[in-house]
Amino acid sequence: MFQRLLAGRSSLRLSLPKLPSTCEVCHSWPAQQVCQPCIARFASPGLRCSLCALPLPTDLSPGLRTTPGLCADCIRKPPPVDATLVAVAYAFPWAGLVSLYKFGDKPGWAAFFATLLLDAPGVRSVLEGMEPCDLLLPMPLSKERLQSRGFNQAWQLVGELAAQSATQARADAQLLLRVRDTQPQTELKRAARLSNVDDAFQVDPLRAAELAGRQIILVDDVMTSGASVFSAAKALRAAGARHITAMAFARTPAP
Image (cartoon, rainbow, N blue to C red; front, side, top):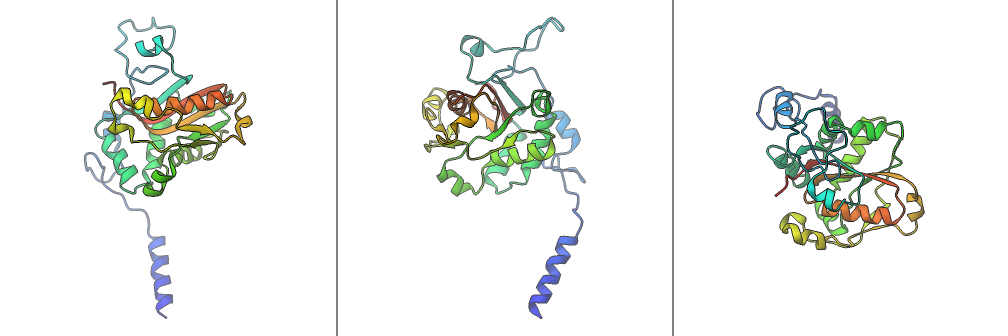
């Protein structure tokens, strides 16, 4: 009898409609996780470097730019990616919401972040374009960090990007491996981040041939200095990847 009562209560909870909630930023009601006015205010696209996605100065000569903009660092030393696409700056309110997602046991935020990323310039064309990408890969976590966090936030984003788009790219969380646990990048100064993740990533040696000549999308939640993404891209390039597009929900502004 008691078990039947519990079962009835469980089915009742499942049958309830999803109730509206307040915006996490301005607390207006009803709203999705972040309301449209806040999205328009805090997620407006801006001019970014096509290789590292750092913000570029406002173009003072509209219509005269003939090539994708590059920052000075990428002109001097291009990173091992062909493009980087992001949705927002890692600043208010997104920094707090990403922390809630990663450290507050809120994996459901991945769907909302993926929606904003798909609305960012160039993202859908890469995922669904005429020359489709082959593989959609998350930035891997170390076993220690995956165990403590309980989920890979980049893999959650990959799943939502695949579900919300018409991409033909195959999602794979086992091809790119993290072979060395490292100190969190946010705890290090910029110069130390490069050495911290050096050789931290490796392609599964038994599957390296799958990357030969392939077009890859490499996904992360936040791109800070770019050291981790670029280190992973080096491993993919060494295995034969032909084209690598990095994608991240948020990008830390230049120091």
